Length: 138
Image (tube, rainbow, N blue to C red; front, side, top):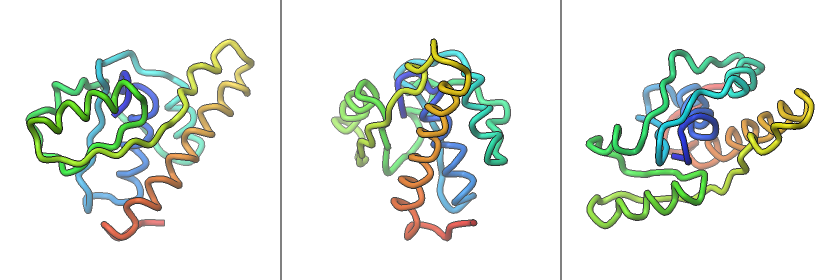
């Protein structure tokens, strides 16, 4: 979960599905929905992954689902997830993750480097956190 479900949480969802397939149920959301970011698709395409027909979701879109864990990637998402724990039995983990869109204004390569950094950091966190929860794919 992140602010708008267009960059960090989308990457995390695609990566988790790639590494853990159907052995983990994964869905992403934002505090509010935003507009898809083409740099996300480009960064994932570099490693052979695709966002498919992703449409940004808000937390309300997923609220009726039974999650055990919400991983938050942005402060506003973390606060929203903690509010959910008042009425739902779930765990929340905060993985502070920079917003690569802050690099917009630089060259295309600088922007892509920011998105790659986020992608690669999420790969490491996801694989480390869930490797014992489900069989990882290479």
